[in-house]
Image (cartoon, rainbow, N blue to C red; front, top):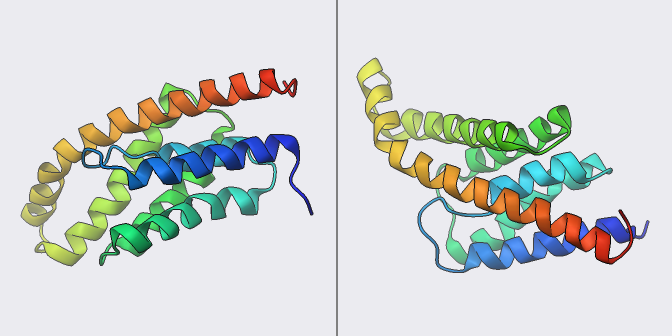
Amino acid sequence: MPFSKKETVLISFIIVAVLVRLLPHPPNVAPITAVALFAGTHFNRKHWAIITPILTMLFTDIFLGFSMITPFVYLAFVGVTVLGFSLKKMNISSVLLSSLLFFVITNLAVWFMHYPLTAEGFTTCFTLAIPFFGYSIVGDLFFSITLIIGYRVALKSLKLA
């Protein structure tokens, strides 16, 4: 089934996100959490919404590399997309909740794989991850705002809104 004009606009935004992720950037300042939430809130075809961040990650990870926590990273992005289905819109709260969901899932994986499974190991893991969480929030807010505004402008210019 061919894509609608709106879906074509959405897909073009995703392609840009792939390109942005491949450019040098500070740790965790990447567009994928925003893309996952955006896909969950904007795609009518839910299977495309779930596939979008996974394909984006898979394609870029071919160039950037995979790690032991890659499956958990992908799972976190599926979780963010499903969160988008539930919340149905992007705003500061949904972006921050998405950032938190990603942080918790991925850092639980890091804790299980690389730290003692104790309260001290848990605390150490999550404490050391706090600076990365700050970067994630900045990136997620920036890319979410960019996606939302860019999408609205694109729809208006194509007279689809």
